[in-house]
Length: 252
Image (cartoon, rainbow, N blue to C red; front, side, top):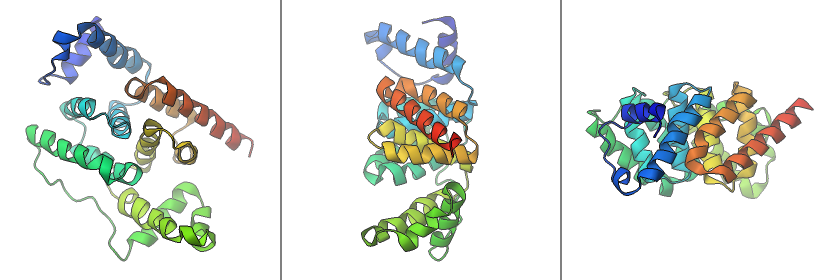
């Protein structure tokens, strides 16, 4: 392991137990040199953004073991526990309860190990009466007036899910405090690219990222940050979609 990777891993993973250094030292060196030195050195993201991207990608690809390691690292470097919880809460809309429940339970255990008192302060801003209206407003602000038309002009058989996108996905999650719009669109992009097979949704949220100010260069950096954790195929697919959406928007 080179000196830079050794310094960073010592800083990030102090107190994290792993047997892999004993059983697979070569693999550990390759992974650490790449993920904790080479890709970090190339990043234009802040440390908070790096951690949010990594945790979101690990949720998306269901990488529980490394998620726990990186959660220890994120808390140890001072990332706000509220921001981390918001990542997991919002992931529920994109990954489902079945793929987020265990991650939330593991996060609570690790936060308690770090002396964090649970539950954290509430971050919700809507109630049963306001969640649809506020969610639709948020949806429109991020994706344009066509979002309102889905409620009135969309296919009848999609009426329920179009309403749920407004009141649940956006009204229950995107309206919460703890993360700003740029961060929420960035982590959504990570959830989608990491799980794969959701290219149409990735196109939509690439455009959504552009709309909130996460430009092409930043999205490339987001993909590069996620790449060690999700592999080359999904990363290259995501970059192709960034290029495709960027070109389409330039020609409009």
